Image 1 (cartoon, rainbow, N blue to C red):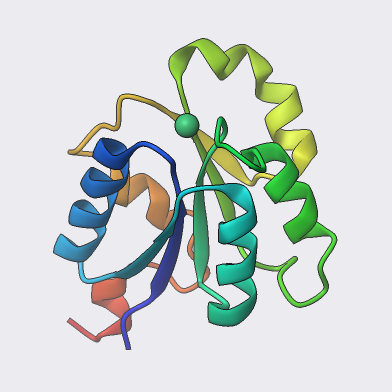
Image 2 (cartoon, protein in one colour; image 1 turned 30 degrees about the vertical axis):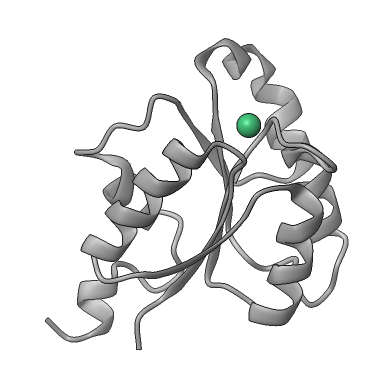
Length: 131
Ligand code: MN
């Protein structure tokens, strides 16, 4: 079964690109446009990994990360931030919020999925499928 990835991202173009890349690599993805919606989806879908923009309406990425880490049902899920380059100075804040790692935008289409797979517990979707 394909691994399932939740994308929390309020920018339609970034969201579309991430969904496209994940689908092309055999992953199932679902999306939320703000942190609160993402938290609700995480609780119902229990994804294998969460990719998260930092600047979002309603609830930002760091608050989402703190809520996930404080929830016994969700705290084990790998959490990766995707952030504008200008935010990279906030590395400490990102890691303290509970993220396992982060990428800078713009998304590197050649490397995005491969780098994300480092955070997936079972390795890549292709290996999961025995291919
Ligand atoms: Mn944003």
